[in-house]
Image (tube, rainbow, N blue to C red):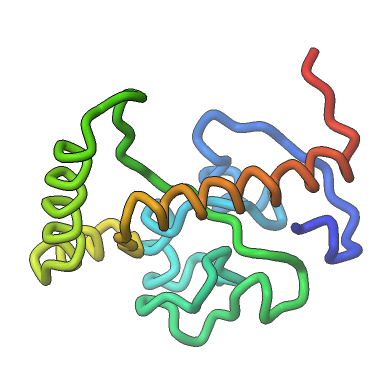
Length: 150
């Protein structure tokens, strides 16, 4: 993650990501969602340093990823659809097929592009693998940072 950069940083928690203080010069940089900052980037009032996605994003094709910059693995939020344990496989299969149809449609891609989101569909098995990978990766980060629940 970012701790691999070697930079010394102080975390300043903001409810809104600190965009006003960043634009006003009180902060040197901020980790924020692209959907919130893209208008400022396009206006030239903010300069993107890296994107935290696995691959470069279409709206910022010249901005490197965390991995390309050598400061860590992808860091992004995601959404998933869950069903209660014991849901019949037939229902899971129908729901999965419907979701696959939606997430692969041009209309869906166009809608999420407005929010600078990168759609990624897949099977329930793909999602289970992603969840396991996320759990393993974040477990290492939590352990390395010696984080504790208080």
